[in-house]
Length: 188
Image 1 (spheres, rainbow, N blue to C red):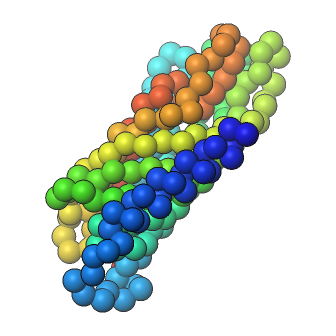
Image 2 (cartoon, rainbow, N blue to C red):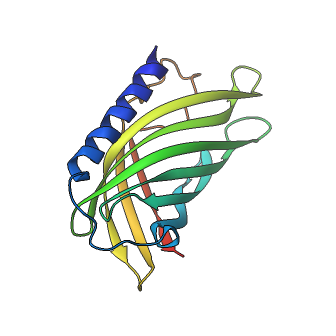
């Protein structure tokens, strides 16, 4: 039931964003090639005495209108847990369809649904375990052009479906409902 609610919410927000922009004419008729953009970035990095992780992502998007874009983002995260014996390495991967709406200059609103397949050391044997985690995130960001067809982006998102661990032995892929992303995108 939760997954159905997430999908309905994502589609509703996407429809509302389209409705805000759907009545206006585009200034020019860009080609399909001009509407496609690709990019990638750092999804996170952390080093501590408990674990280290590095997350990277890549994305492909399509400019539906000059202000509204949609696309899909692929993610990979490597985590090295240092508190287990022996040390434990995890490989997480996921996919996130998203919508972005530029509402004022370089500022944009962003919504996405994310499915992440993640590994963790299950207590008490620290056996490698894989589980799935669904998130619905929303927030905003800033896009700074770098030349004619590229730009840097920074986004701060809130994970509305974040779960606090109920015990010290629960593992979830996020340790906070706040998700920060940064990267570079380029058009063709």
